[in-house]
Image (tube, rainbow over the protein chains, first blue to last red):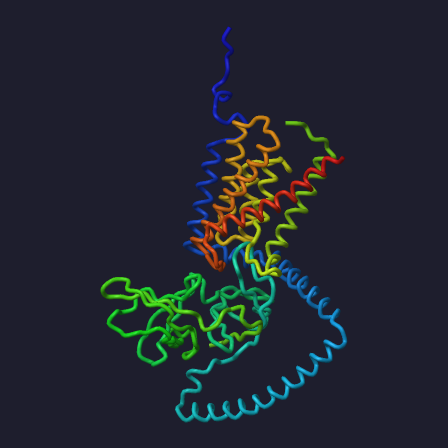
Length: 276
Length: 168
């Protein structure tokens, strides 16, 4: 005798799995991705949930600090004495450098005043900050600073170190802030060739900086340097960005230019945020 | 499927919460950087594969979706990155159950490996498109292979903890 079965029992998925719901959720996820890609909702959500993530960041940083401090404490007395001697000689050297620097600063100030550019170009205020752990979020490399909203850091402020431009403040929380590095695909800056002649917009491109369309009629050679132009009113002019490492023809009219950044975000732990 | 006793269920729920917190914490620590290796194990993919394949907690498509959104908020490059990976893992598991009603140990491990690979490929592709801010010297294929191997190793460690919830 033939056994009577319902249509549901014959379907591909006999568990409580619903193919309709599955497709619906996949569609919903794709919609979420599209909306986030277009309107950057995740940034705002992370800000709203920072009361959960901030303790995590502090915990991670404290864990690293604990191990570093533990390592430091376990150093022998001799090593510490050597270090003190080295630091003393470093202090002497830095003291001399500082004297020279003070002279140069004073001289520079005089020159700026003379040319009436001081107020226009100098940043209003600078905030020294330290790069803290964590340096990753999942698989994404991030730069977190130990200064946040309560220290006066605002979204969009340029971040520099002594070699050049590091990036821009991307997101600020109460006690910390996150930097968008030069090499991020979201990064763009108005730049000027250091001979003061050619303007271009430089974009981050994971491993190099790139100028996608640079007029082929303009001569440019390897090693040419680019600095911030200041035209965007975001970055002060004259901060080093990078130097040309490759020029390849895009079409008859334009060249694609690759630049190596002057500095990498993780090169120094201390950086400076400019209020410009 | 064998019915779990109440004690085992409670133990497994606790294990899930523990592993979830462990994954969050270690997703913020560049653990392998101490030995100069820039690979980030996908702790959440490993946890999700274990949860789905071993039924660590009772799971439904809604829970998978919500877990994905939470993980995206915590560590995702874009909203939906881990959600879609988790949904695909869930889909793969349900589909494979059709063909492996009583899978052997070897088949289970192979399925887990395939699931981890699928999860990592999905997450990496989305990462590459939306936020490729990780720097690797080798090719993407090498990166994928090594990352899958490391994540599979993490999965095996999670699996040991899972098996211990059944006691001796």
